[in-house]
Length: 130
Image (tube, rainbow, N blue to C red; front, side):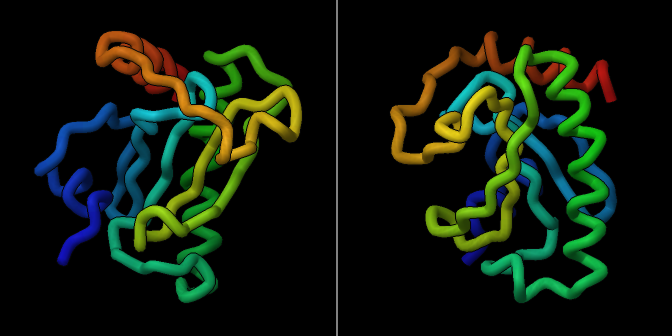
């Protein structure tokens, strides 16, 4: 059965897309830790990041880099943190999260619940900076 991320990539579930190429897809997390929280996923379903080939892992990070830079231009923060948790969806994904402290990457904290319009505006701003 296809993961929720595969369904998003295939357009079966709507998202606020940030970027896409032939191998990777990036979109806003709809229950973000912070405004501008982006998920970056390979189009190929691989559950565990370290089961990906070396070239694919490198390419994933290179795809994520300009997105992280764009997030930092849009959302006031010290850095964009990167987390790979991989427990909630069996499909490799990077979390790109604007951070000011290490606690901003605490996934046990309550998530934000932005409106569709708020997400659309943040996505537009990030895309404009790519």
